[in-house]
Amino acid sequence: MKISRNTLLILLLSPPPTLSFLQNNSRQHTLHPHHQLHLTSKSPNNSNNNNDNEKNQKLTSSEREKRAEEKRRRSRSKDVVIGQTSAKPDAQNLPLDPAKTEKQLLDSYLPNDIERQIHVYTERGMECFKMLQLEEAREAFDTVLRLKPDAYVMHAGVTLFYLNEVHRAAEVFAKCAVLFENRFGCPASEERIWRDACELKLMNSLGSKKLKSKQKDYLPVIPDWGEGGGDGVNVEPLDVAETRSVVRDAMNLFDSSVVNDQPRTILSRAHLKSSAIAKERYDNRMWKMLSWYYLGLHHDAMNEKDQSKICMKNAIRLTKGGLNSGDITQCLPVIHMSRREWYDDEEFEEVAEVVDSGMTIDAMITEGVKKMTVVELKAALKLRGVKSGTKPKAELVELMTQSLLQESGMNMFPGLNEFQ
Image 1: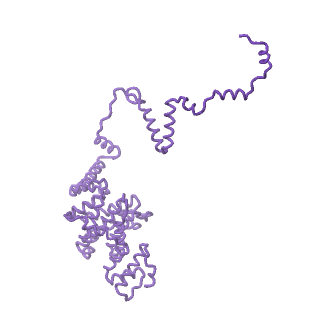
Image 2: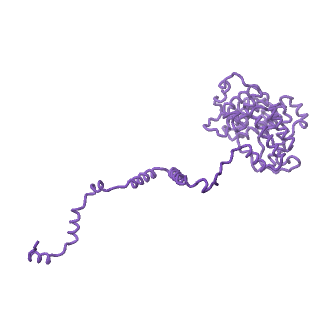
Image 3: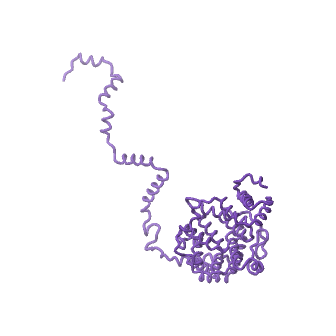
């Protein structure tokens, strides 16, 4: 191809192409972004990673950590190779023998054979107790106390109580209370409740006069804090009071009954009843069941069979598993009903009217105060610094009710002083 001389001169003399010319020329060959999206190739790995990132953004931090842990476990699943890493060649799993393992454990922390026997017989006694085999439980607990007279075996006292060996039961509770308080420095509330239950049982079976004349021979007294413990041990006053409200109310109920403080008995019973009929959605600590049980135990000790039966049946309704429960406290209502032979054909609903009565604590207190005589009302009001004068019983009942409500922190009658 031949180029003329004029064409060469034009090419040589024309200026070079500008930047704008190149840009415009390049735009003519650039695809629209919409077409680029369809023509751009994406690898499967990139799309999967994007999907995973989107899913992870929707997960909570705990769920993301859980997925990460599962991924780490899968990556480590082939780390251990038998014969090459953690295990020895031809190694086998150790045989499972719980009895042998338990024996080795006991041998490691129990210093001698006597301590091991005490452990074995204590466990046997507790198992027999839960299975309602109280005679066998007593034999096991007696063996423990023979091997170690100062052993803490509170349920030995409960077993004796339900076998009607009330005197021995009171001795066990008193000794266990001193051991517990000396060692842990907090009140042995349950032991004191049961010891007082023994005294009330004897008081209402033998008569108060006969019991008082032989009280030193029959029932040991648990020393108050500051008076000294057993074996001449001086006990410092408690820095910690009973914090469990149900147990504290039960302890006050039994103690006030022993010393014949009727107003305090009425107030404690009202508090305990209010805990029993409280409408709580969850009762994980079984306070409602325990409230019914202590109320039933108190009525039983006072020889009030019908009231005790009502309370125990309501306690059984609230147990979770009964004898099959791991908590031995839940076995107590079943044991009580069985030993008293109170299982019958009556429906539980027939004895549960107390639960649905809707009684308030002030109504419970008023109901109890009405049962007091005029002499008892005047004496109780005098101790509380309230003048009674020659007022009729109706006014004395109102004064006593107001005074007890003030003591309980429920001052529903602010005009109490107007009656004085």
